[in-house]
Length: 199
Image (cartoon, rainbow, N blue to C red; front, side, top):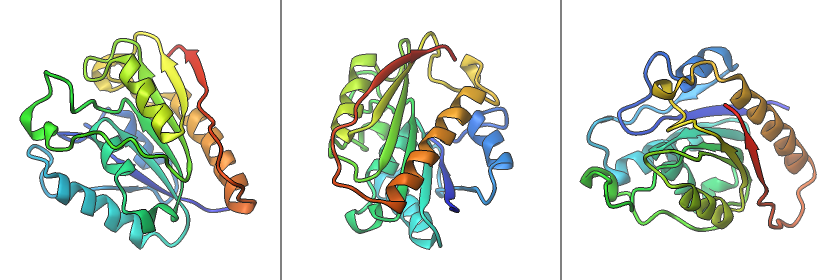
């Protein structure tokens, strides 16, 4: 079964060495969301941009989001959520934290609704932009599996994540679950699971 990978970077984009950028070159048919302004994000514009990419997809979507991109991904309009088969939500940003820049606070409050598709939240136990307990709260609210990385920072280039083979394994597992869901949809139940892995 074919899926449409849609990569959703966070604030200020993902640089050339970032795992999202590298994945964009190796995942077949991958598309990368391009909002008009990376440095001064407007929630309405970012949400509309992600929604437009999902709306144009000709097959079920796999969202691959990082940081602020996670919030834009879980904020899809309800009718478009049916087009999403799965979402890998890496290092979601807590825009409600005291140290969050004003331009990011505008994305709050963090959506805490259940997601109608397979999802995995990947968090680090030392992410400066989101405490682990907050990431766990997001995963629980979204109904996501929860993967904890030890000492992984914001799971970006600065913390040593380039190709990130473990992330590709998580994406492959998500894709398999998405195939099962698309082929034989069942009533959704809570599936929050927590595991600990090294980056």
